Amino acid sequence: MTVQPREQWTTRAGFLMAAIGSAIGLGNIWRFPAVAYENGGGAFLLPYLIALLTAGIPLLIMEYTIGRKYRMSPPAALRRMSRPAEVIGWWQVVISFVIATYYAVIIAWAVRYVGFSVGQQWGDDPQAFLFGDFLKVAETPGTVSSYVPGVLWPLIAVWVVVLVILAFGIRRGVERANRIFIPLLVVFFVALVIRALTLDGAATGLDALFSPDWSELGNGSVWVAAYGQIFFSLSIGFGIMVTYASYLGRRADITGSAMVAGFANSSFEILAGIGVFATLGYLATASGVPVGEVASAGLGLAFVAFPAVISEMPLGGLFGVLFFCSLVVAGLSSLISIVQVVVSAVQDRTGMRRIPAVFGIGGLVAVVSILLFPTDDGVYLLDASDHFINAYGIALAALVALVVIVWLLRKLPELQRNADATSAIALGHWWRICLGVITPLVLGWMMIDSLRKEFDENYEGYSTTFLLTTGWGVALGALVVGVVLSLIPWKAGGEDIDLDMEAPEERKEP
Image (cartoon, rainbow, N blue to C red):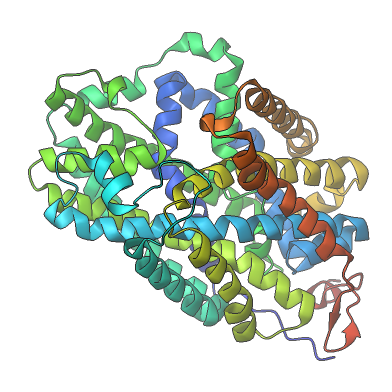
């Protein structure tokens, strides 16, 4: 069997742009501002910073080190630590597969809204336009009766762009795309924030966001929210950073890269908070209501509240184009990284060349996405799948990975030596304490708190049958498929792959 040499990033800056592009996604723009507002405003920044330093960056360092050390996708890298651990890697790959199928749909919506912004086609009722005229949402979940052409064709376009970029490889595709996407995103969003800050009522919105409620720091749920926001915004826990780091050179600065990526992501989140709440302050002032009545998160913020603002403000069309273009660019850079996890795992699993892997496996992800989500039931399916795969897929897989790597395999000292050997900033005991104690405890508490809410009442009031098939079924199915994939013998070119051998890069070490 001829083993193909693994690609490498051209420069450290190329890797950092790709890593930052993966981390900065839709959630940074529409999730962080609402989470901060609901959890103490300016006071939330303290637990948020502590969460970044005690969970976010330590986890990034661990995933970067695993990827760089073993130079393989998550299943192969974890198998080299211990054969049974391979199942965790495949679990993460299946989670990435699921997320990619619906993440692309939201990007397709944003593509359409770039055009809708020019003529403000949502009219006087953005909510009715979104769910009725545009998405044609069914009255009840679980009843697919028609496709929605207005979502189908931009979704196909999104997948064509993503697969073409991936087909060009890490250097000529992913790295070059992010060298365009990240500067473009910064330009779009800085222009949007500057415009938002000049609106009447912007100060009211910023005051609502940043006025600290220090009493909230005694509320445990605020700290859980801070760790949850850091965890879900950094693209950790489902194989992306292990995969991206597997294309690093063996002398890459691991610790410094993790700090740059972590702080860049958090800086963008705060910038997003400023832009979003300055805009909401304008809407609240124009409507004569408190900011709290117009503040929202997720789809409601992006596709209902912001269109309402665009309709009211001078040069609203330009503002809308900037905002939705930002969503498209941020979404594409993240989607590319998610699909790369699946493609890389299949290449390591089969020895398949890149183009067949991209169009074969990446094409399968696209087909599933196109079949399921541009329908009148697509919003319900997206909502349930996203909630359960995040809470009981990403977070649970990360918790299991930490327990296995830290406590069962006791790999942290070895990983620390590997990171310290090439990093400008040496890791101390704090790193092992964070990963061995703080992060597992927080993730465990997040699981318990989330499960308690699930058992108190059905998510969003959906029927139990619907949640069992599209929510719990998806989360459990990811684990089951991961287990099945880990049991299949690893072969490529008709020969067993010896995944316990040292990587070529490591054999060169003195």
